[in-house]
Image 1 (cartoon, rainbow, N blue to C red):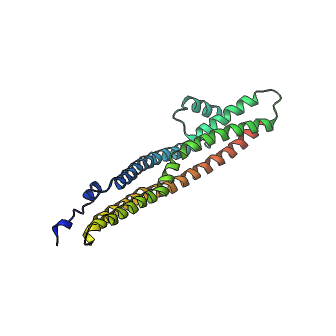
Image 2: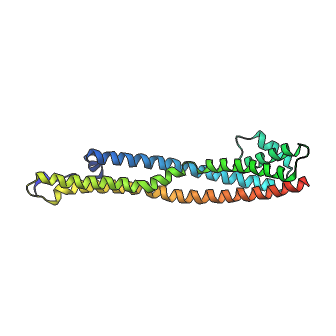
Image 3: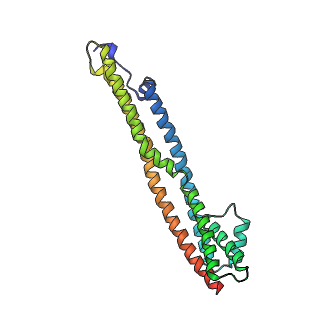
Length: 227
């Protein structure tokens, strides 16, 4: 075998010897993957905490605790409160304020209470859904970015054959190998992002359903107090 066509086919060597566009594609995919894993672990802790705090508050709420005491506790520990507790706080605060106004119709009081809870609900949902769009983008775009690196690497390999009198597999193998590494990196960035997005989207939807159910039940409790 001609020693001139012997190449180091290790992954590290293929990456360092890749053409500049392919290296840029690889760097972009590694950066996207690093941010994806950061947001994945961040969302794991955020959603677990939100679910745990919702469980604790619902347990206390349905145990028959005094609503005024729960409200004061929510106000005093606002920074550490969970999403459900913040929804309760905003609704009870608006209910108490409107109820004190003379001649206020029951429907107006309840409508204001529901709107206050709905506004807080939307803010909490936006917070829980933050960074999910990034994971969705990485999951959908990364394979195509890797494919671009693959196409460029293969194209560059075949362009190099123009200067070779006798083409062999050894001439094109390194370029094709580096191109396939770009594809693998695209999949490595995309697959965890897609799995995490689907999981977190389902978790957030379940929490949203719990919040909506609580708002309806809490509204019924407050409406009975008005009559």
